[in-house]
Image 1 (cartoon, one colour):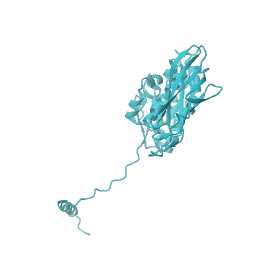
Image 2: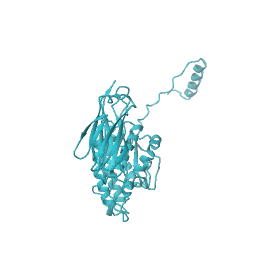
Image 3: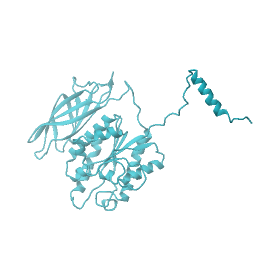
Image 4: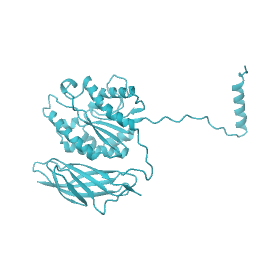
Length: 359
């Protein structure tokens, strides 16, 4: 057998000699870095955050079924659930989706955590506060726009809310039903091929009598049901992986739309919608969808072409002169809407799709 006792010393001597002669030594090979984990943000209020044990159940089920390269993210950490899990989340107790949108609270939270996927159960406090579904959905739209500004490839899971029947809110139960009924159409209008919005039914089969401890917040059985509903939808997104950056010239067209009430009067109002190119390439045209309050109908549009349906939903396509938009550029169209005399503050859920990108 060879005597190898002096090999380490000889290696050190050889390296020292080569370095003294000015010979550059290549660094040792480094293993390829692991694929970055998919970052998932649980977003909502106390049902998500405190203690939010459905997040622990969901996390552990994902881990046990092979989805290990994930990272739950949020500016909040564990909030009381004793089960071991990645507790980072964005479930702020008492928050209203409308307040988060109105106060622009989400962008800083997104910047701090950079999620790829958002899992959102948000709006219970808004419904409890008797805020109209149109206003909550307008807030949803703004939050989605902010998510896409953070990450154009954001994938978004939105819950139809679990039932609510607290003893001190007799109307809450029906208001949840009414709001949930509006979510699927909003999601269809808001979803894009690049940044899909998927509705997850958390309402069906959930009992406030057996699955909550106070008519609002989930008990252990409620946590099990919520996690079970999120799991297949989230797993399907994880199976697809994080979209790769398409690079220059390969980016899909994308746009955002925002609503503003210009003026109102008894029986009508004037609205304005601004469409902005949210992609890195020029787009050749756009189509905006306007879903006004129940009973409201668009009667006149300028700077666009109106197509309306019997249920009040309207689509507006660009005019000949304002369809092509450079990255970050905007076009605005206005409209007149007829409203019932009992209609409140003007509001509308708006979204848009962009035409094929041009060079």
